[in-house]
Length: 487
Ligand code: ADP
Ligand code: GLC
Image (tube, rainbow, N blue to C red; front, side):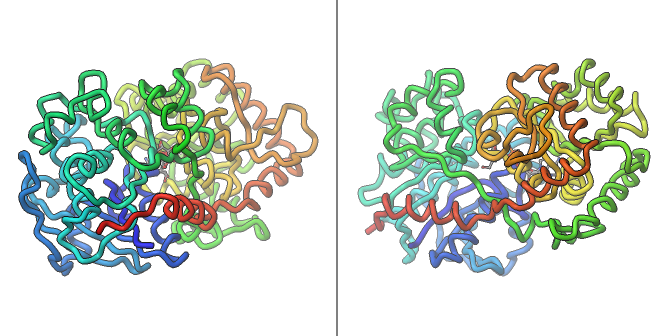
């Protein structure tokens, strides 16, 4: 099948979270299954630099409203995935984060930046595409490309089938009503069964309304978002789509996240040869200025520091006291909300040698924490899928998670007092409150002190397969249901 992806991130060129990893790995897995995948992306500077010889294959002009004309360039990754890059210097040639300016606020022209991405996706998936390559399915990811199915509905007659994958319902791409005209949508799109959502224009709502199928990144999250408690205002709409809404658990890219082959680790290790893990722990402790000790448990965190991730629970005084008293060490890598960043920095200052906090985005350190920590902490309030708990399982670093979304679908709890691990591979807490997190950390600490039990727990994680083959097969089955070549 010919599949057009539309996404705002793709690792390693642009990544702020799991979406970047998925947009990179899923096309490779689909290609291996014999499909032809092209990924449509804004031509961010990093992409233009690495693919500086990418030829112009079309001019995107007269897109409607105030959307600027742009050039479309085509390239190919070493793995055989096509790249279609929307070259619009005015919109995409700038540094930093794809969504936020240097002041930490959304770029003021995000509506045009991602309006253009959505508009271009729709065009390429329609009868009016300037390319001879006509996809049978347009696969949109998150709000940034979710306006595409609305464009197809209002402006085109013979569109490809459209799948919208919701990676995170919390980001809905909401803009003021007066952006409708500039986006080149007709006035009649402003309605309850159009792009209007509580008196704003929402890209994500438009996608949920008009895609042929809506998927999300775990089966549990697919159920949760249909409840009023977790539907973020869209539960009713999503319930209305229950017959064409499903969850496919993400995979992990085992060429990037594999402790036996990871070039970012000082010592490789595997389930069969686990000894190297201890050397990674020492390297991590040394690098971060923690006391270099095998006999103290080390908890690790790699995360966006936002409300979603629940790490404020760990930064509270109660949890701090419990951690210090165990005693245990803590290594945090993250960036996000300023208040939480400050809390973690202060925590590290109070406990030099025992708590280390690195603010920023650091791929190498993320890998070293996954490998060097004994246990990974991820108490998310909600989690559509989550990749870090799967990386942790693969790296023999049993995770502590909340029972929500993809975390509930991947982590099996080791109950207090268990003498053997059975099928357990980590620790699960219920409510998002500090006492529940502390109880889980104490439980993990007790299990860690029992080496035979801990080895079983690690082996259960390291022995599971989380690669993309099976999920890619599930996506292919979905594509077959909705495919419709644009004429
Ligand atoms: P989300 O997409 O909600 O942030 P996921 O668990 O799906 O959560 O994916 C997060 C991805 O981003 C992982 O690959 C993780 O290693 C990476 N990541 C998050 N924060 C950082 C950071 N500060 N430095 C390096 N990598 C990070
Ligand atoms: C989102 C979610 C995360 C998921 C990722 C990739 O960022 O927050 O849970 O793993 O997308 O699908």
